[in-house]
Length: 264
Image (cartoon, rainbow, N blue to C red; front, side, top):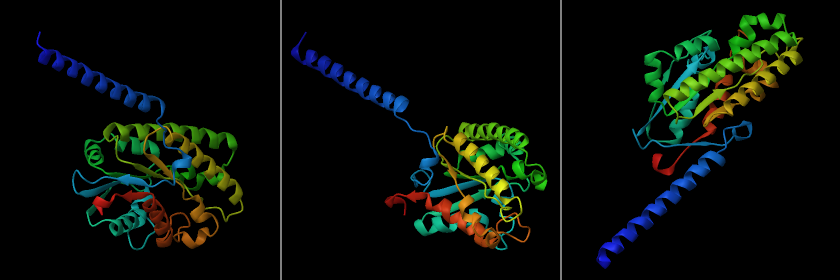
């Protein structure tokens, strides 16, 4: 066997060994050093790449909060997120709002199984979501029964359904960051304000724990935005945000999204 052939065999063996080592390192990092999204990570900006399409596609899911009910401009927080992102990039920003007024988590699960909804989600670069307010407040019924036992049952049921929602979204699109907008308390100025605030905080904690099990699912807090001066940011129905309330939510969500230099 010539020295040239022997040299080629040695080179191939070395290259194969190097590739195997690199693969092993990547596998170890993925299995043992990956950190899921958590409450502490909520405020870290998410960097997005638009190299594939040259545009940014946003899909919004959920209930009347994502529809923007109460905002006389019709924007809702989704519109303000879009406005803020347009300030950061010259690329085209488009959004599709699939939210349904009055929707609860079980209904959103059904919606996520629709082929057209899945098609929209598959193309999304960013997914925005509000869900859970109707599960908790149930049209005001929860205010008449704040018993710990009943609330805990409802919270556990919601957490299970929220997990199913995240799983369905990730089955269709496992890359796009999902911004789940947590609950605020529209009733904190009522006589039982302390009790309802405690319930909302507990629900938000449960939701953040579910989100922490998934990569790039960020639970965005809104409780603090409304707690001190809730009536200044509520619509006349004393439940949905008004224009200023939605703007505050939208600005917070947008602040968590950053774009690389090449995308601006």
